Length: 234
Image 1: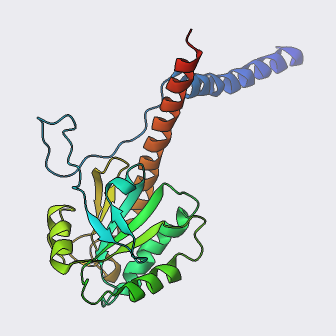
Image 2: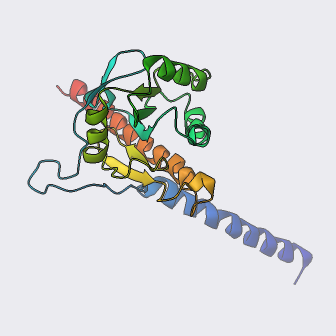
């Protein structure tokens, strides 16, 4: 075989090796339909309802500024429900876990943290406001981290019956709520994971927040395309 023939053979082989991954990318990246991972829905289901998935009931508690926050005011946002008190023994470790999430999504107005005080009698508006101010000073958007207080009995009843957190002494449990008020994730365990418990689930929550944010983005994209299609119809 001549040298020229050998070079043609090598060039042809190299071209095939380059063309195959290119075709693979075109088929799977352009022609195929993307399927994103989805999160399960937690809580009791009601198959008779239009929306069978459990949706947290409405609430009305005052935040650190004295403004009333409700479930419906959070619709359209992905948020972490955390239950603890500023006077808890492990407040530094709890705050550190949430700071990781808060800082990562500091530029996302659709992602928030909502704290439900487990000791409303000792969590004064002043202490709650100071706590929030200290931990949100680097936020690009305001009102991303809220601290709710109110009647002690009403708050604890909501945590148990609304957020479905029965053990109020366990500060390591967080719930992830989607844009429609569904519980889509629970993180932590029966021991404090930040004190040597069995595993750390917070990195998983960071990834799951991104998945729920993707759901919001896809919904808004579809709504925008539908609106554009409606306006162009004769």
